[in-house]
Length: 544
Length: 94
Ligand SMILES: [Cu+2]
Image (cartoon, rainbow over all chains, first blue to last red; front, side, top):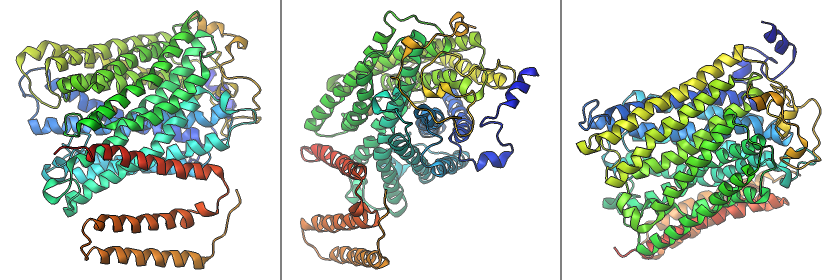
């Protein structure tokens, strides 16, 4: 094809070298990003497969498709795979890896070899996890609560724990790399107040990865030690305290939600100004709200333990602090909306995902406030209300942002355009399918359907059928982009350097970028999101 | 970033101190000090951690402000973990 010939002439990171070795031993952040993309997509489909089985089981009130024990394993491994092997690495390790150096005008991350090491650690952890799943799996929930995990469960707790322990190091190394890169490798003129807000979001995320992940890693080691050597740490019959586990676990695992959502917020903050042709409203507030979400996120963990037996005084403190996190989150939502106000908005695919993100994140966030309220939490603890809430944040928020970002930067990553009308269709399907899946779960939970049961009273069936139907729609919405992304790599239109007329250094190099990102080291002498001075591309505006 | 060179002697001295202190911790565990059991163990452990951070991790020799910020924030977040957990443990009725 003629188009293929044109791209072949331009040297870029994809055609610089060929062969499996040039990929497995690469230290190029862009290639490592693609390695991560392949691996997390693999785990996304494993996690999605478990989700589908869960929804099929819940189609009928009776526990008829799988045994109760199998069901326990399904939701446990769905959670572990989706959280530790998909959502945590998703945006940072793929889009962050690809974009952080490009956006600040650097040749690569500060430690390219450590970057590759982080991928190998992820793969080792992933192989261990797959082995664990194939040889029996684990049934503790993704939360590994003691004393069940250390004294009672007869599944592969140790193996799953070690897999997540190792994947934690991959996450720490990514965070470390970003912090050092953002401090040390910015191009001349790229001051802190000119950084794209995507970078601020990743900086905040990295802080959590660095400070939080070691705690969950140590906690899992303690679980393994208690289970294997019968040390008395969490087991009350040996002088331990089971709530200590929950304190340590949630110290990481509440902020872990922000590891998933902050990068998504960063993506949305890039998309919205671009498709509104306006400078972001309140740059400094958006930047600092990322940092405050990261810090406040560490102060609220015991809201997961209100009915577990912590003291009332502690519960009061943690409830009040939980409300505090709503402030920076709301600042972001208001600033995004203010940016849209009187903007000339284009409803392109990435923008549709951004709209979806803002709406669904707001619903997820507000229902989080219900759960932070001490009285209401007693009623909805461990019900489907909680399940719906965190899926609005993690799927409606984090995953929507990831898909929006994949569409926004796909031309830069692959050098090809995806089919715009199919893209919009998929975004619509995802949005409808998502709401159909998870909105009924709010009602189910409020009516009292507990989570983690494989059968339920018949009066809950209608809402459960709706939810399962939604999951099927959602699956179509996820498969579609994968198909047309792959299709576009061969048949898509060749992408120009800056198809959206976007600001940001990543758009000033070729698509796809050369191995060292820029032919000339860039010098920045303009403010971020300078959309008054960037012409909008006609093609993108008419919708292609 | 100038690299400060630490002599092998210092490293070995620190290593031996760490080994001795590990022995002391183990030894003290056999003596019943009542409420001081935990306190003594923690004091020794903190001292060992300080040796590792200051000398093995070169924090003592750095002039970089950033390194100090990193160390201080790590300690700060550890205190958050302990402090807010104690908000529960010190006020629990059961
Ligand atoms: Cu939480």
